Length: 290
Image 1 (cartoon, helix red, strand yellow):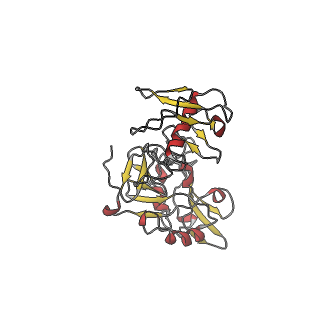
Image 2: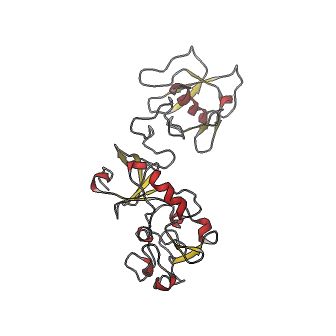
Image 3: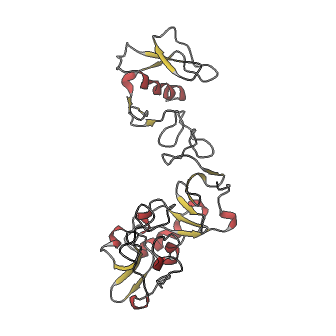
């Protein structure tokens, strides 16, 4: 299906009734960019300026949603500007820079950062960039992969070195990495009283890792920095120690505390896997932060 066909489909938002195979409508463009419908008058073709005058649309072939998207018979959604929700432009091709024709990123919002190496990214606050398959924390010059489901840290430790996102060398995170995202609880901030930073910290040596139960986290009630999207996915697998059973340390984003859990219970059941990479200056996204 070509760009003309997809662009014409959006004009269906102006047609209130369905048409039979013999009852089709055309679309004429006004100088002000608006659209009007009318009877076919000899079938003009799109002009050099991309106008749609005289093009036939078949209302039965698609469904118009309340937000202006058009759903084609194959289930694809066409946005009002002709870009598709799967990241392709209306003619089926993706722009060379990886962004959509309207500057948006596959449903993730506007393209705030367009790096030649990493493509289109969206900013959260001024210090966090989400690219398609990894995220960058500009406060600490650290990259994180998007979350994946894993059962323990051994599985994540096997996955991280195999990943190629961004061209980086990914590793299993430690609690010191996760704590760089913490906010709202003094004990578990990077310089707080909790002594859990690396692996093999036994409970007796952990120090004060419990937060005041009256605290409310700054990230929609959770204890991540406000600019961190999907704060709940930073219940991440880090490291283990073994004393008859495996226990793991988790940063509890609901309370701000750092707590040990056994595999298969409580936080461990909800934890995701994220791999981490410390960025050097040559790997930082090339853009000027607002």
